[in-house]
Each structure stands twice: as structure tokens, then as C-alpha cells.
Image 1 (tube, rainbow, N blue to C red):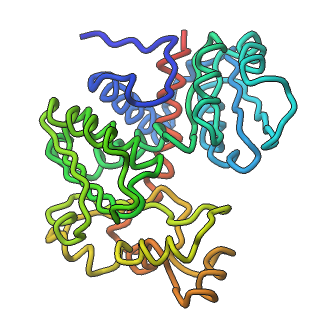
Image 2 (cartoon, rainbow, N blue to C red):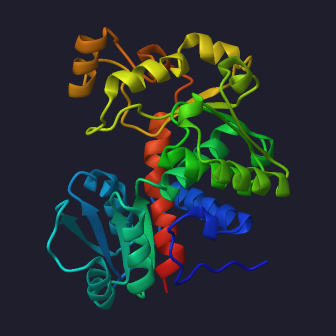
Length: 329
């Protein structure tokens, strides 16, 4: 079956079929290999891509800039202040769509990237919003595909931490499409909405997979091929003490990895990670709460089981695959 994604936007993985997701992962893998072999063929000559980000989220776009340059495209980084006065989102989208061949948007409100998608009239990609992070999910799936050494439909993933995060929600949708077994292990207060759980579980069953939300860590990680977590705290996170108290039993330590009963289990993290006191937030938490790490111990983060920097690299290859498949001639 021939698959074409030309002209398509990527706002969430809900809009893509399992075959289309598999196609994107295949192209990303091929482009990654070509870059490493110095045999990459630029396919985006003459294309112009706008990388639009709010001022506290622009870092997510770094890999996108390199991906575009590798493929011969010209890029511009447009940083929008949090309370920018550049006209309405709808008008901004229509202006940028007249000038650029594609737009990647990275910000907080998911409604903003939806407006870009509705009015730009060129492909729009969701680099990150507070609701969904499809590019990270695709990078995660590519990483799992590289390390699992089994069909994706046979892979089991245990996610520990805040089950409402944009990353786990996007990963859940992608895993369900590919028929994987994904378990979200979290305090009930941080479980996704019941409507989301029901919808993803139904999609997973349709494709031969499973989606489970539970509280018991030992049950959740048993047999897992990958244990995944994300940062407990954002830079502006309110209620640090309460979040740390609730999430503390879900930190990834050596005993959690051992509880998988899988010596080949890999550790994943989307970054940034608070695995030591080497950051400003880490220093604050160490001083205020007496913790030298939060969602993952330094020993696990730096262990041979950790594939976190493969994930970080794979974001660039996935973005490149999205650019190539949607706007290349």
C-alpha cells in the first residue's frame, strides 16, 4: 500500500493511522542511517520553514533547525513573548502561511496550534503544547523500535509518574495505534481523564494491544521492556512539596528496574531530568526537601540501561522525516 503524507499537518497522533505512524518511523530510521553514513540526500531545497515558539519553550525547536538545514531548507526562529501583541493567532497563522512552506509551533495552549493548523493553509506541526507532544512520542517509538529487538506489538512499556502529562498522553495514543502494551503507573490523582483512558484502551484493543492505568508499581513494571518517566516539575510548577510527596513512591530507582524481572529492560526519559542536584531546581529541591534526585536516581540515569540521549537525538530524525514526507517535492 502506497502512503503519502504530502501536505499533512501533525497536531496529534490521533489523526494518523498505524500504517502512517509506521511509515514515519521507517523514514526517520532511513534518514538517521543516511546522516551517519554521510549519504543523506537533501530534498527540501528552496523550502522555507518557520519555527515558532513561546519564549520559555523555544529550546524544543533546536533539533528541528538542524533537521531542516540537513535537508537544505531555510529556517527562521520566531520567538513570541508570553503576552505577545502580534495580532491574533489566526491572523499570524495566515500571514506566516503566505510566506513559509511549513510551520512548527511550540507553546502552551493546544488551541493555538489548532488555530495555526486551521488557518495557515500549509502543514503545521505541534512541537509541544501542554496537552500533546506527538513529536516526542514518535521519537520514543523510534527509540523502542531500535532497542527492543522484537515487533512493536510485543513491546511492554511502563510509565511512572504524572499520567496526565502531554508526553504520556501522546505516547499512549501512539502505542495503542501500534498494538503495544502500555501501563501508566501513577497516583490516582494524576490519572488521565476517564474518557481518555476509555478511548485509548478501546484503540489499543482494536490493534491487539493493552492500555492500563494502575497504582501499584511492582505490578506495573513486571515484564516491562522499557520503564519511562518524565520530570515531576516544570520551571513554573506550583505546589512542589505536594507533588513531590505524592510522586515520591513512583521514582525510578534500582529496585524498580529490578522489579521488571527483565535484565534487558531500558530506561527512558524525555528530558530535562532531575536526577541529581546539578540544576537550579535540583539545588532547590535538595535544600528544601533533602532529596538528591527526584523522578530517577543518578545511578539509573547514567546506567547502561539508559537510552535517554538516543531519545533526544531521535527527535531530530523524526522531525526530519515529518518535514520530508509532508513538504518535499
